[in-house]
Length: 241
Image (tube, rainbow, N blue to C red; front, side):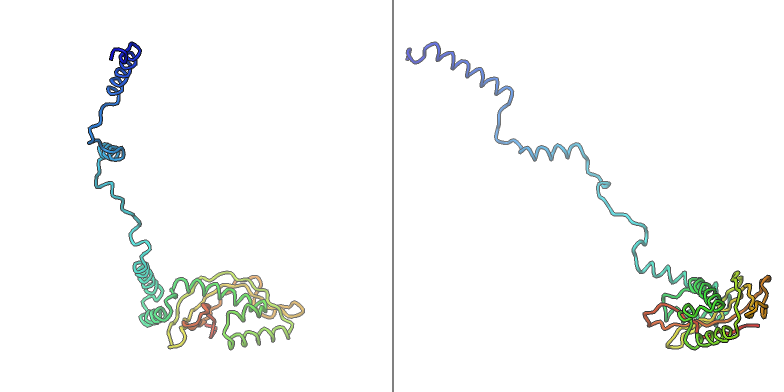
């Protein structure tokens, strides 16, 4: 026994005991009830962040945004207001415009008036210039044939028209209907133009190159609401006194 517990062995044993005691004081002891590291971290986070009702995220978007029913309702109210505005108390015209809207939901009075103004300017300008291609795209065949004959007669006589479109001080609905096949809308145009027709020698034969004159026309536009072609064409024209 004395040989086993020699001095070097006692020194090693003593050092081992000192090292173990220091490790125990630094690391502590495990009892078997310690929480796993992840659990400790979750519970620690829960202590620092208090859950409240504000933590629930609710997506927010403008009222009615993306709601087809609500958008349709707005369009219907807008169209109804336009019908009241453009019919100007004419009950028959108002009913006619409503019938057109029912047959062709894409129709609105304001957008139609705006389009009719552009069409009118294009047509009268093309007629003065003898532009048959433009007229063919905007006029129904019978109306186009009448315009073309007038252009041909003018050309045969060697006449030319100096024409300037000034403006449309007054444009209004005259009539509207759905005839079970086509929607028909009649517009009265009061236009200001400068027009002078000259013969082949340059002599003025009609109009006045230096004076604005007012002309009044009543045109009917029509289209089949079941057609894929969205364009309206002029089906009748008449000059008002």
